[in-house]
Image 1 (cartoon, helix red, strand yellow):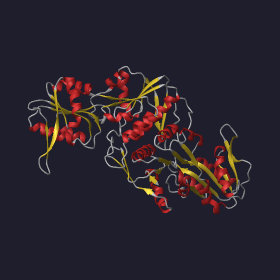
Image 2 (cartoon, one colour):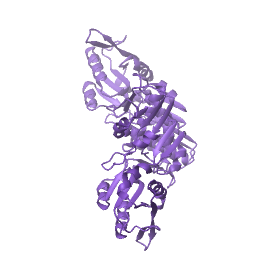
Image 3 (cartoon, chains in turn red, cyan):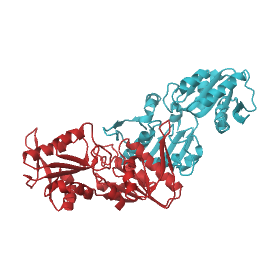
Image 4 (cartoon, chains in turn blue, red):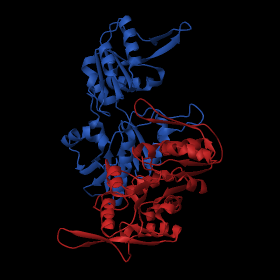
Length: 279
Length: 279
């Protein structure tokens, strides 16, 4: 049975359509800003679905309140599906004195939830901070399904080496070739970016990544691919954490930009709901 | 050593002036809304000071991030001073399916903090939800000190029976009499409110309570006291969680309204900093 939090409202209709049984929950805000939660159902096991996009702290606290309400009602096993996990990029101490912020949030959710499912977590190793069972869910299948016909016998590229594993996972769904962009300093002020060991000429290309925010890298990658004579250029990203103007910037540089609906945006054309129902 | 969170910035100057040693902390927000925290100091023990007024969820998450950063830096003992504790009025299940929200927040802070100090907690029993040592700090002394001369040989009143213990604590600081207002239904539509077993005629009155929001009760109490021939009427409340227009409404009905600075407001004239330094 699903309980839908504020960060999952945009998935509710499809979850219901595809057969998900949903427990009603009342969610509102007191005049002073405090959240109010009330769960209108009972049972033994529940799966709470809520992405933690901005305002992320409100959604995090709400997940705690829903967890508390469900435990109070006697639910024995609680799973949290947090498709986009806030603070996931604050995954290490880069300057002394910083927290590992993602750890703090995972520990807090661990108070109430036995299992945590996140889509395409920025750094999957950080799941170790969740006290219960933590699962990183791959969106490779839904992204591949969306682009299958458009891409044809094209190739899949990651914008950097760090995202190469994602490119591999998506390419495998198609049975296509994959590679990644490499950055190389060619002068004190210039960095060259090029796809490694792969010929893009005449090929359609799908660039994949976990998060897109300013979109700067995607625009640059697209410009290089055009120069190299690529065919159609698609961008398929998991989480659309778009900065202002980013959707327009990227859309203008590529043939199509599509992200999943872990975060609702105007280009969240790829649904993760089928994957949620499979968990 | 003190670490000042976003909800304690208004106390920082006075804490420093009165000799509190302060560890610098960098607090900011990323463009996507995520908080960034960096602690610029080291040590073994730290006291993090941050009230959780609106936006409360941001301040709660920030307390977790600061706690994580301090643990990461090797701090062994962490105390949280949260003068106003958000969600403290959501202290029980009144309708089936509700959480005990204050419990969720206390449990979350328990991940990082060994001790928790709250001023005039709405329901002191809820401290049992904090896994470490929880302390309810009385503002009676600072409130009494503020009103001592103005009140003279007046009396202290609580607006209802539930707040009677607060009136007692403040009255004791003065060595003055105290009582509470009682509500009595006098017709199907009318409720009468009157002070129990005490003569207010010609006496200055200080009405005390833990939280003031709309101020409706205070205005009503003041009107009744005027009718009963009271002298000057003062309102001295711990937490000024004012609804819009409430400060003006209450100020217009009484001789003086003053709250403590657990929350910064235009009438936060009573400082709790001396009490913080005593912890």
